[in-house]
Image (cartoon, rainbow, N blue to C red; front, side):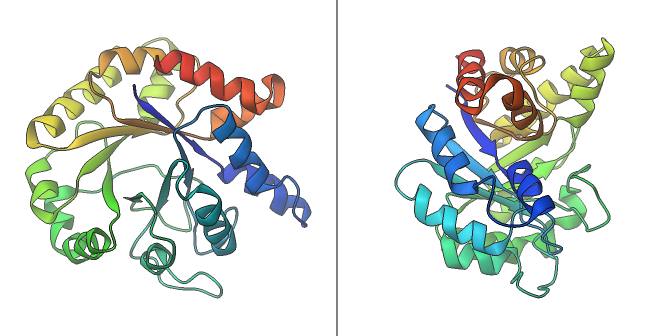
Length: 247
């Protein structure tokens, strides 16, 4: 079954908007785990607009030995204040997986993937270091991406397909072209020897179609829609609904 990794960034956004510790990141993670999710995802950024470095450390202690821990982020973003950098955080907490994403402070959310052919040389040493730490490495890519042989050569084990365009097209009622791009991207990546993850704007409405279309989909990382749906359905119930879709 495809693993569900719940992204908790939006819990941190709500907490940070008021200050203090509520809603509690650890309690949210524990609720998701008890409901059956297979992983927790966080995406710390240098501006600390949501997940903070201390959250990353706290969750590492909570999750160890229970579910997978996926940390996403830009490995080239310089340390700033209390943010030590993505690779430094990985050295501290040794997550199950690190998903490398070429985002910047100016982006509200991640909106594009790596150019595997052109980014190989700068990514190669970072991938090697993460592998030495025992982390599985996934690279965020656009639907229609090329050059998966470069990802394999640098030591990456997975890709994560950026599903934002698919989700937008699905909402508009014309997802066929974007779905086909995701399917073909997954096929090429798997043929190269990479496992395939997917994430961004996936929801209960559009997940089932994607899951059926991509055989062997290893993992989906879902946060924004899941947290929004949980406002109405409750966190545990929402996680269970996603797991049922993935079954």
